[in-house]
Image 1 (cartoon, rainbow, N blue to C red):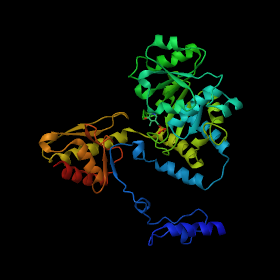
Image 2 (cartoon, protein in one colour):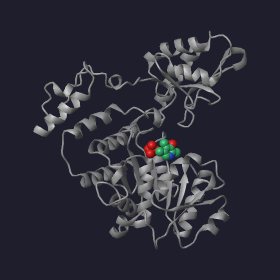
Image 3 (tube, rainbow, N blue to C red):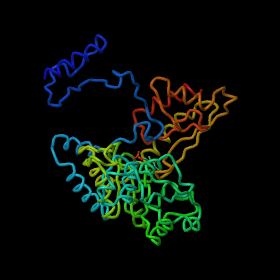
Image 4 (cartoon, helix red, strand yellow):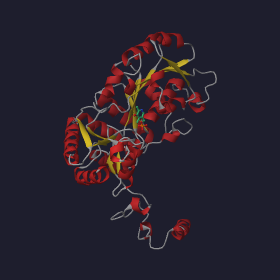
Length: 402
Ligand SMILES: *Cc1c(COP(=O)(O)O)cnc(C)c1O
């Protein structure tokens, strides 16, 4: 207690005069921090923005279903064994989805690392402790060159080398006694010469486990079991994107023996590659409820809402001189409803990058698509927009683009 008090005193000395520390005023230490009226982000000098772009990870991802927050609040107040929680929640999710087994991870990336680790180590405790040192072990993962992307670092975390292929013939040539796994990115299904089902069946033919990254292709929720039905042994998903669970959560689904191996490679087990990818009991339960809720939710309602907002914004922007708008009404996760805005940069004396910068730096701050200021297009996405933000957005568009 003495230690805690002197820590607080030290901290108080660092805080500018006039900034009240709420936990100095009657906090019992029970964990109930008085929050009423606090503007946390303002206190630390941040400006929350209106998200007229999309649910990008850098912008904080999606918002959780209210049912998820309820479940997390419930879990907060209870104590349970984390090993058992992972097993039980995994069983529930697997039965809901209709697959052999499931494991909650700290994101699709973590699911990819744990899936790769599972293939490499199985349930061998010595190997689990040893990776990413793969001395004497299989250490190659086959991937189509067109499926190489920033997130394959999650696979490489395990110490494997990615072997790039393009054709079926390449795959057959690349397979050897060092081949541990085949890796596929479903978001890029139509980029490569080998499509998902064929890729998975090549793995089956040669007895090599396959892992598919299923992030960013949900909804439809049927994809959760769909990728396994295509023949993949393991499928990784984000919990914090379309499933609308906690931001830092994910799912690994698939073969029972491999999921068990992945679980042993995961936190709360300490000497493992997954120990740094810890998921709290609140998040583990939150993912379960996110799956439950998503399976019964009619995602068409979202697309309709977003489509309506896009039309309203287009109407509001119609009076801005010298711009053309195009309403994109879409009904899939990869192409949600959005508004494209065009103008002649020379005639207007305004580049797209400058317009995005002004939207971002104005009051209030508004993020537009895409994130890179220099990107050639000015787009408004409505997935994260709230009805009451529309008037402000249209006003700022009029100010910046007129
Ligand atoms: C977002 C994304 C990931 C990473 O997912 P996290 O849940 O943030 O770890 C992986 N692959 C693809 C295709 C993604 O879009």
